Image (tube, rainbow, N blue to C red):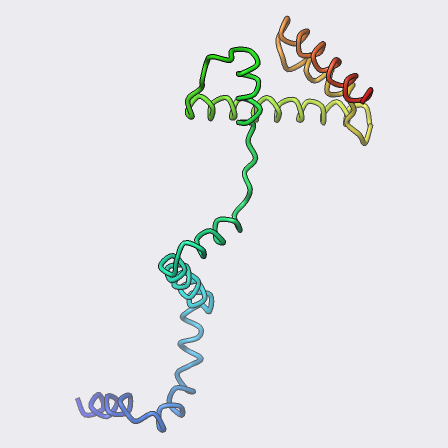
Length: 158
């Protein structure tokens, strides 16, 4: 019991005596606790403070985030061209956006594969056209190719 009693007052000594003892104990503590934990806690605290600070700081935080580009505007424009009197729900718009992203990824992947097979460094309209024929089924592919050709000729003529 006597050695334990001696250790307790040694730990509770004034600040002037602590540095000498802490230097002996620091290497053991530094090995046990990783240095990365404290900065993470410090990062969390300012985010809470910035939320309480006001709406301006929230707006700045949101602007730092990734800009998510969607096809929602274009889907709506096409819908109004085809059916001016019909609307679309946000859930349906999300599904349409996911559908377009999925088709785009498939076409881009196929066009990339075709360019690699032919040992070409560039994806041209020819690779896109071939990938459309491979990815889309039957009549849909024919219509897509004709619309794509029309769009490319309109773009090059202007």
